[in-house]
Length: 242
Length: 242
DNA sequence: CGGCGCCTATTTGTCATACAAAATTCTTGA
DNA sequence: TCAAGAATTTTGTATGACAAATAGGCGCCG
Image (tube, rainbow over all chains, first blue to last red; front, side, top):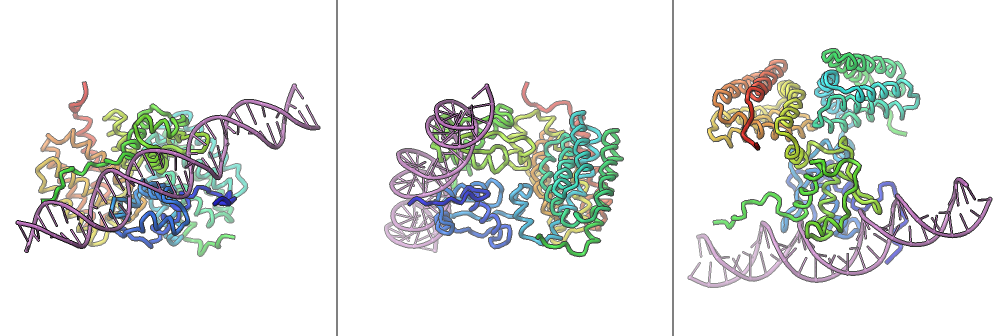
């Protein structure tokens, strides 16, 4: 039967949709660690897809550490310690499944743990080209007027800083920063005083990195994160989207 | 007895073998970011497998951020910034593809960045049950005689500490610690003085966590990592290749 | 001459079917 | 009683076919 669909929908691929659906249901707690998932044939019936598409979704989820499949057993949800929480999709599903303020709290906590150290490393180990990228990101931040550009350039700034640290093992943290900033801006977007203050704090980081002053870079990052946290806790409730 | 004679072949599946083969070739630099991989049919011929198996491997590698596939284009290697380096497989391929000392250096650098903060968080936020697990791991370390048990209990200790921190976003770091310790012990295994010293340093961490003394926990962890680094740099070269 | 849009070729995406392999559970025989 | 083996269920792999997407070439038209 043709007429399959002219959906042309955003994220297209069927297996990706199924993956997201299952992933969200796992992260939301509908399937707890240790629980057995329906078998592939059932998923296929549930989502009107072939077993092939289901299997591709299952494979992706397995690669992200969420589940494990074995013949005759089926797919079982892995313990949370195995979940690859720094995967873009997994973190997004995680965010969607939990309280917004709690999510921000944990991302900010993680940032406070790693970003000062990253800043210090960046100051000590950056290459000229990497510094250039950082400076460019700062200028983009300074020149941004639309909220969208503010977020994008802010993310780029922290990514550039991460690159300056020259340690690939830390790169996955980029996801956390991105999620934190994206969600943060819903709190801070209408507060211009905060943005100009943040700009100055970012500038301090650039200066410290440029002068290869590790401790200063660490302190500057800590100051930035502290200021951000203050804005969060001072804001009563973010207005919902739209 | 149970006919378990298969020795739990880690990844016997065909698609897993292909995934590892391709993954290693990417991590080794044979396929650089931006490069186009052979198409699925070619991989199938190369490894004597069906397109089905190849596709499953491709899907896993995509989920790990190494590649991206598009119709008519094929599979393209993603920029390194997208690679999920904290995935168990990816990190293993990475380790296998680089100089051992350099790998240890970067893992230790990452640990110095993160673990002191983890220790501090652990001291402040652990639950009684989590502390119990940490203590048990310490005792296992103290009682270990075989090298294998030393490594395993050491890894368990740091995993337990990570759990004490109560921040799931940090959990993926467990992989780095595991790899670092596993590779470290090749340096330190025959040095009993180091192990007893390390044991004491671990005990300091337990004490600080048990008394909820964040700064002390941070310092104790820093001391442990510093001592470990000294052992590494003091060791000329582990027996390896010529 | 140059740009726009159709056409085509290539590669992945999806479907359907069949069978193999693994592992739990049941069955059965000593 | 209990262990060896058969039955059963579910994933793993293979094959073949077609759909969908898209880069790149072709030709039409301004």
